[in-house]
Length: 132
Figure 1 (tube, helix red, strand yellow):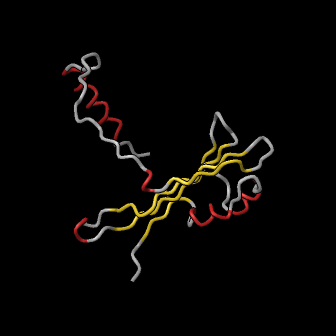
Figure 2 (cartoon, helix red, strand yellow):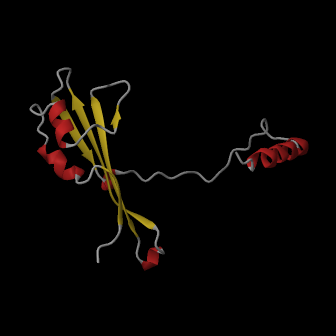
Figure 3 (cartoon, one colour):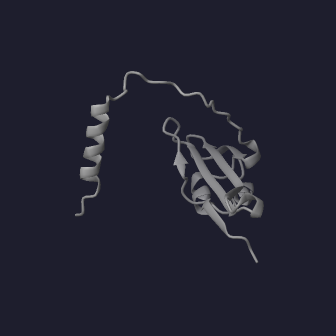
C-alpha cells in the first residue's frame, strides 16, 4: 500500500530542471515544460522561482504528524532577451536550521488596563456571533 502524500507545487521538479539548458532554453520553453512561475522577483522580473513540497504521514513513533519528504526550490534567471542564464535547485538538505530565542520582550507601552481588556472582551462577544 502506498503512503498518502500531499504535494504542493510542481511534481518532479528535480527531473524537469535537468531538461533546462543554460544559454539555450528561453522563457517560452520553460513555461511549456514547467508552467508559469510561482513567484517572480519584484526588483528583478527576470528571476523566476518554482516550488515543490511533499509531505507524508509519519510512522507510529511520529504519532501521525506530517513529515517533510521533499522541499525543492528552483530559481531561474534570464537575460534581457529571455534566455536562461542561470539555474539553481535548492533541496531539503540545503535548508538552514534556524534557532529562535525563547526569551520574550515585554512591551509596557501597549499594555491595556483592566477596563480596556474588559471592554474589548465585551465587544468581541457582541460582534463575534452575528448571523447574517
